[in-house]
Image (tube, helix red, strand yellow):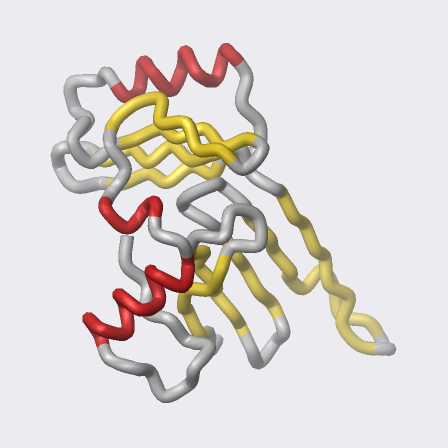
Amino acid sequence: MASLIYAQKCPSCGRSAIIDDYYKTDEKYIYCLRCGYNYSKRIERYTDKGIDYKEEQYDGHGVFILVNKDGNRKNMLLNEVTDEHLVEYRAQFDDDNVDQEKSYLVFFKDGVFTILHGNPPENFHLPFEDYKKKMYAKYGQPEFDFMVPIEE
């Protein structure tokens, strides 16, 4: 199945969000590894009249990026954050197998990012337009203007 993967401005925080666009089936996934925003439009069923899609959207309350010392990576978009979640995330972050230099937990609420653990990468705080300029300078202008290269 053909898809295009590129960055676009996040509708929630204004940073770079990742788009996975299955243009042939009209399915689409958007997720922001900054604020945790996520959207999906996927085929639910085929009918005599066409295709029924299911759409879901979550504003997001942050992200938890956990990188193990062996290089395995786990990206969690936080749709809900409770005190119990924070205790669990802290325990995972403190595990001996975790590379704390590359892992981070960021809470997002009312347009404000709060870093709870770790250090997000350099591009984390860039507004989308600045990120876009940086990616074009690094990778060149793509054939289609809407396609912005992805980098952490």
